[in-house]
Length: 110
Image (cartoon, rainbow, N blue to C red; front, side, top):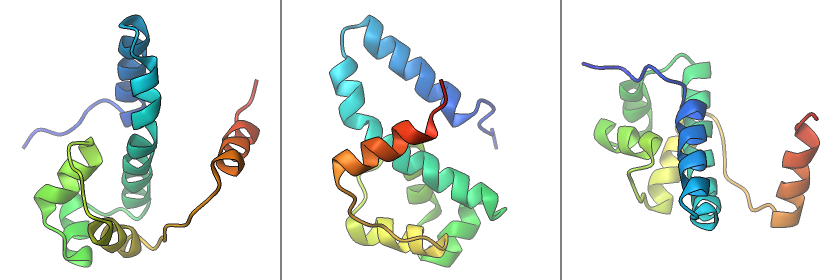
């Protein structure tokens, strides 16, 4: 079975540049949160040294759905997202956008 060889961040960089070049930067920004969730899921899974199949077993969500979620090709229900996130040892929370923006900017270095 083929594996993903390029890091997710490389893929996102290519998409972002293509969106900017095509005048679709606003659409990219709107989709950014969804892809950030996918990237966090991948990072958490890899940090736990789990495969997608392992997350599927732990969460009760089909392996194919885990794969689609990680590739940004899915529109999962909240219950599905929570099952996956909880199986990785995390939770979801509501964070005001302004606070989330400040948090992201404070992490970046010049």
